[in-house]
Length: 103
Image (cartoon, rainbow, N blue to C red; front, side, top):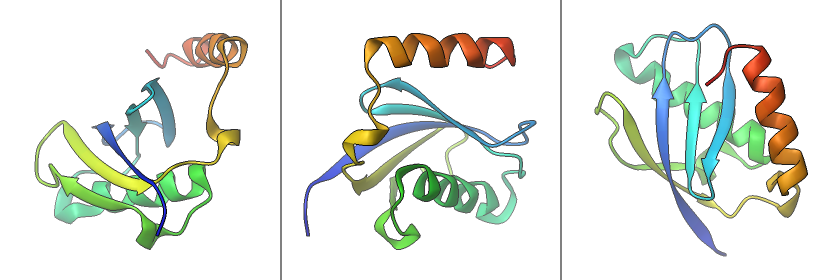
């Protein structure tokens, strides 16, 4: 089926807006606006990552941590190279996010 990558995802439910913030090559901070009740936050994370990476929702799987408060492990096809940021793009993104109060 192709290469898959496992990402460690820290989820912030009830955020002001939906956002995906790369922390490292395999770690993400994901902000979703929905509360963590009845798995809705997990579904929102899957939907947001699918849109972010341009893949289908069914290609993203929660491997562990579905009920843990802070961390998920998600298996996904390797994102297209267009999703990877170089040093200049990373610096610019961090600068823009900090203006909006995202740590």
